[in-house]
Amino acid sequence: MQKKILSCFTKVFVRVVVPLFAALLFSAAAPAQQAWPAKPVRIIVPAAPGGPTDLAVRVLAEKLSLSLGQTVLVDNRAGAGHMIGTEAMARSAADGYTFGAVTTPHVINPALQKKMPYDTLKDLEPVSWLTSLPLVLVVNAELPVKTVRDLVELARAKPGTLNMASAGTATGPHLAGELFKSSAGINIVHVPYKGGPQATTAMLSGEATLYFDTPSGTLPHIRSGKLRALAVTTLARSATLPDVPTMAESGFPGFEVNVWNGLIAPAGTPRDIVTRMQAEVVKALALPDVKQRFAAVGFETVGSTPAEFGAYVEKELAKWRKVVQDAGMSAN
Image (cartoon, rainbow, N blue to C red; front, side, top):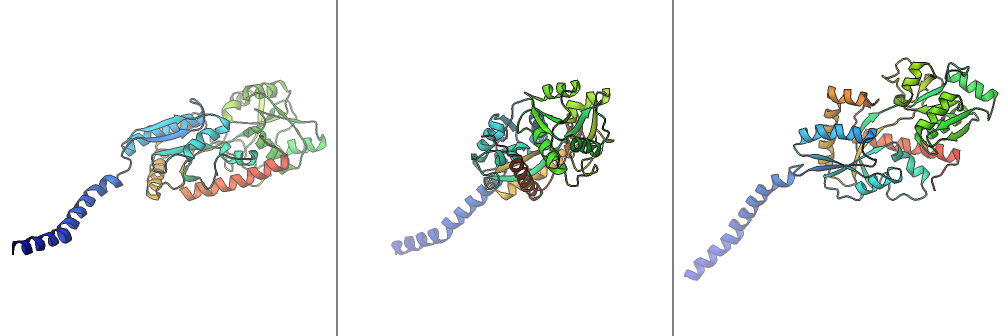
């Protein structure tokens, strides 16, 4: 009789009590598993400390640390035209604890490199567009042109005699110039310098004819009257140079060169984490002090959905692939 009672008790225990106990354990553990972030979050910056992208991410990380309730660390991985840092991010665990900053070379490198260490679209998950910064097309103030159209007419009248400065081959200013050449159908000579300061010096001396540079690099010389700003390269006018027309307004519809920053994650990062991070990023970008700190270095805050940022990256990849092919450029 005791054996029957014990057997019956054992069956009830196994069928009812054990599953109930397991369910209780699962329900108790579930909130801990779902809580994100449960530890510090890392953002890999593929550039050295101190540059504009690094500055933008550090400002953002400061705000995200407060809103997420966990420290957001900045991990600088410079080198190979930003590819070292981006590869490190792409190879990280897709668990929501590693994100990466990307900027304009992110969409240019695939056109320049014969072999990439990662797939820009398949290995990476877009989170949000962060900031935007135009380039400004400048000429020496002594050049007899007042508008982009004047410059194009001069270049067509004297093919191969005007030259275009850049901070080096395959840099943003060079590619902006190549896009201008193909859009306008003009023949101007590219002259690469060792860096931005050297290109600016060439412009001030009259050695170079035109240059696409950031507003921060040229603004002092525009204000002094030594350089003349003809146009900015974003689709909307720049708050820094509100009186300077866009390239689109100057007769080149759709002409856009953006020095931008964005946030990405390893492919496969849980959708709910990407959504939460994107929402926190957009809230941070809307803060007045963040806008002010970005404006100090020329950045304008953007913010976007992951889908919007992903579509922008795809469009830029196609655009720069064509520019590079038309110019016969390669980094290899």
